[in-house]
Image (cartoon, rainbow over all chains, first blue to last red; front, side, top):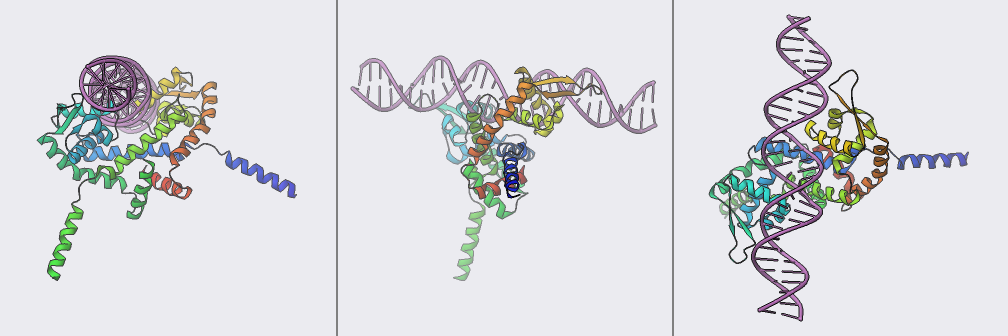
Length: 153
Length: 153
DNA sequence: TTGATATCATTTGCATACGAATGAATTGGC
DNA sequence: GCCAATTCATTCGTATGCAAATGATATCAA
């Protein structure tokens, strides 16, 4: 009986290890959904600027004139991606572009007056979007979540 | 003195409320970066399938033949997005498509033999990617994080 | 049965996102 | 000063992701 019993335990252990794969429980999948939800909430608060465009403007407002690639690094976009974002901000008159004096490779990006007033107007709305995204959590949970999320990012 | 002191406190409180906007601390921004990091880790483990393609295959393996839009709902992709994903899986011979008998609108998707063996082979690798993504956290932190993240997704 | 409504899928247009290749300009070592 | 390696930016190709418009089919109600 003891023999049978331990065999059973082994089988059960195997079954537990061998559990079916649940996509819904994988970090990557949930991360993707949480991100989707935030983008949707963001769009409801700020209709005329995408989160990446907002990030580029906000960072530019923070650090002042920088090169395109440097700005990309600051907002976690590779060179190809930041180029598209800046192109669209430029087309809308929110940023100005110029070549760096000493280093002619560098494309300097700066806020226009309209870009500055736009980002200053939108920051409170972005904060509302952040709040709404975090609304399912208590204040204590938010603090914990942000700390852990930052470790993963 | 008491008057001055409370005035000072009010000024400090205003300053705290009025703090500069820190993009790096916004959920949306960190969520986007964490997602980027996971996609990168995933690609290092599974080179020939993107996370959405993997998700579609894994879900199909789980639930069996379904309509394209239904599968999209299950993996959180809208109709336009899931179509592209399924088209590419079809082109690679991992899924088969057929029209539903009774309802000729519905496009039924099913795994091919190769699709089945592929997803069964890749699931352990995806689990490794999940582990690596979560590696910066302790087991206890992982449990907390997944619970909170699920609330946001 | 027919006409309005709803559902499933497709297509188009736009916006990230990234790898890889390319070109222009700069820097470092010698 | 010169060549090699590096850096900055651009371009191309591929893959999500979503809104909006369209077409085909089903369903429901009068």
